[in-house]
Image (cartoon, rainbow, N blue to C red):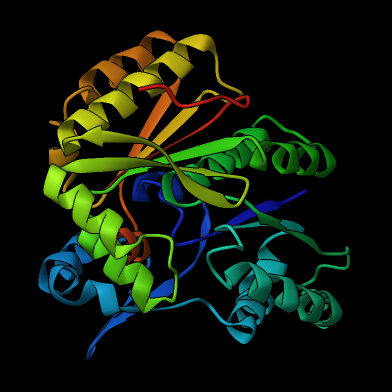
Length: 314
């Protein structure tokens, strides 16, 4: 059984991990004024676009998810030939239309794949599962990493489906942003009133940084901490404690809205890396997707891991 794994480009995985494991991307396109870039998880291109455009006009950027027809064409063009079963794992459907687009495309794909496969010499059936990861960015990546681990361990399609569906509801994503004014401007542009002017102004004036928690499709603040460095250190310390307590999968994913050399100098990060190593947990770090950066701002940190229900403690 040839099993394929598909993610959208908001999934914060290192490019080398994507290449090594043959993960297929559904690119999300970002348009800022006249500048347009399809995000293929190319860190150099992402950072170049960040420095040239995001800081100035990112709050008014337009993000364009792969359409129903584009997803259909990708599957019928290559994936129904290369694989027998595909798991397509998307960013939470509460924040993007890409999950609904993939679901709509799946009906056409399953109706139209037979002649394509037969022409390529495959007479066996093709199947796919569209899975809502119920999370964002680094947290979205945790489910994809587990899919790779399961596939490489020889798990059956049924075992993978059951495990991934169960896991998606138990992944926790955390984020600290640098600029609340940017976050508010972006939210306002998208019609999201979750970050009010008063809270943005107060937070910026007092240098208060909220820690946001993504879980089961919802995102909400769980702490307010003075100072960005202090906030990320407390987040890294908390993550390290959850690692020591034992996670549901041996993976922590971290993404940063800028150069990874900056991430590695943030307070608490080296200690988190040591804690993961001591507990045989893989720490995957990546530049945040372009989609992520235009939505939450330059210099944001996101962390994802699978764990039982818990409360954040600073």
